[in-house]
Image (cartoon, rainbow, N blue to C red):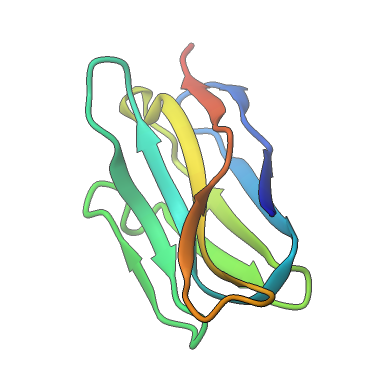
Length: 121
């Protein structure tokens, strides 16, 4: 089995910064894509930022220039540095990883449990 554990959420004032981390562990053979989604109350889940194992990245238009995704493949960990936070960034943030488990011949997407980010004065 594969587990994703997130950390780093919390309450921050507008204009502030937070850094989220997500570590994958368990029966991992290799990891392809990793990244972050978010879901605000009453809204559908949306992609925030993604990264490929080759180093490619993509961002939602709403966070470009403010958020930076990075990963440490030696630790199976993905990060997102969130700067210049706005109230509209308030949401539950979920990390994901596309993982090939040991003994498997296919990749499967796994999700973290979610971490709350609240931007408010």
